[in-house]
Length: 242
Image (tube, rainbow, N blue to C red; front, side, top):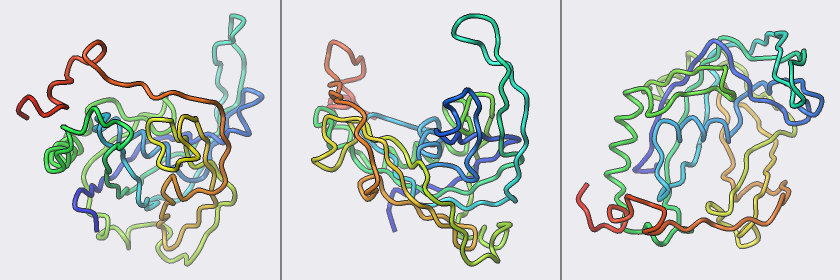
C-alpha cells in the first residue's frame, strides 16, 4: 500500500477515449474503457506539480458500457465545417486508485519533495472537485470528481460478477522525456500500448515502464525550470515555507 494513495470517483454524461486508429479520417470512436493517459490527465487537472508524477494503479468500471453516435460539425483546417460522426460512451462512472512518485528527472525541484504536503493538498482538491475543469477524454465531455472508498465499491460495479473481460491491443499513454524512467526512453517521446483485462469490474494498470509494446516518436529535450522561467522556484528549492 502506498502512503500517498488517493481514491476518487469520476462521472459524466459522455466520455470519448478516442482510438487513434479511427481518427485518421476525421471520425472518432471511443475505446470501451478509459485509458491510463486519460485518467492521469484527470488527476493532473485535480492537482499537479512538476516535482511529482501521478501513477494510476487501477480503475473500476461502475456503470454498464454503452455508446452513442452523434453527428458533429468540426471546424475544417481549410475553413468552414466538416460533417463527422463521433461515437461516445454515455452515462459513465469510474472509481480510480492512484499514487504519486517523485520526478527524478527534475533534480532542480528536489526541495519540493514533501510527501505529506502534496498528499494532503491532493485529497483536499479531490473534495473540491479539482483545481481545473475535468474532461473525460475530450473537452466536450465534462466530468465531475469526488472522493470515494475504492474497496467499498466492489459490489456496485455492473461487472462485479464477470470473472474476466479482455479488451485487446490498446493505447496506454505517452511517456514524455521529463517523466522517462528507463534509460532507453530518456530524451524521447514514447507512445505505449498494452492489453488490458478487466476482472470483476477492475482493471489494474501496468506502470509506464512496464509496457513492452511501445514506439519512439521523436527526440525530446527536458525543459529545465530556473530563475528565468519559473516564478515559484524558491518554494521548490525549499527556501520558502509551505
